[in-house]
Length: 144
Image (cartoon, rainbow, N blue to C red; front, side):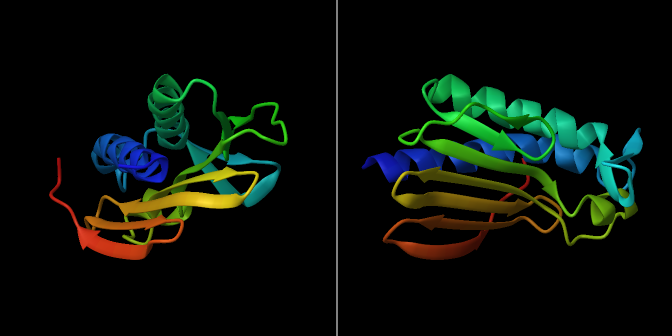
């Protein structure tokens, strides 16, 4: 198993773990706020909790990596750093209203470009994965 396989496995595992929180609050988050002064740009406490969880899982496994997250910002990034890019709930408006077109998005880039990507929709159990040089796959996963 090469490094990209390990990265992909870590991202899939993190996304599935985050999916537990996602499903628990899907369609009924407790707190909804707007961000950036935009009345159509929402953030929920679930967005923040999922991003915190993803950061903790990925940085625990790869402490030298950096993170860019939609809700919690980014680390200081150097030219040679490996960087996880996280959107904890891509489609927050749909998530709030219980519309199944929303997902957890995770990618890893380094100075050569994208290495792996994961898109997981816990409501439909669809998991899309991609790894550099290996193409992309769509599979259905069992709900945890």
